[in-house]
Length: 224
Image (tube, rainbow, N blue to C red):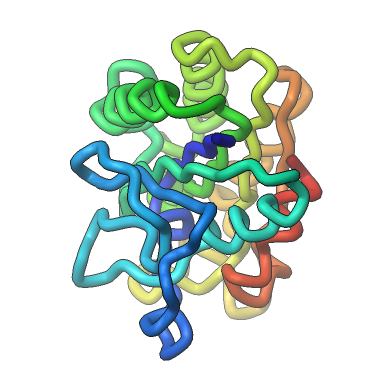
């Protein structure tokens, strides 16, 4: 089974509206997800369960469907670990979410091989200059840590670059109404492009131009 680790915050966990086709859809036959109890279940939306009152459609299942179409009879296992509203500090070695992701990944590896790590996070680190200033180093630490602990030196790491948007509570830090980037958000997103020069086997997609999460699956796949 081809395994994909899904990590980050709400853009990965999924906050898209659950519509009729999603609610009524039958579970996938050849796509599985590792549930909170470490049991493989046939996947359907929502894939994550980080915040039951908020979870919705995310990129994971659509990505898996797209990948499945390129395989010859293999199955796919999703390892959902994303948690909405979290800072990258919890995702670096020693952080609680990092350790949980590693633990769940090793459990999943009993059933297959790790074929990719998908990362969508950063909004929570764009609020304070202190967080933005260390983002690149923390992202580097996250990638290196996962590759070492999971023996995944050649596994693709695919990161979604932040898009500019107007925060409901703090538009000073987020993109201006005029379309200008705030210094912090611009600095934070540049970290994604800088990190690609320092590490092998990685890809970056821009979520600014993706109309909705379901339609982004092919982009994730092409980058990976």
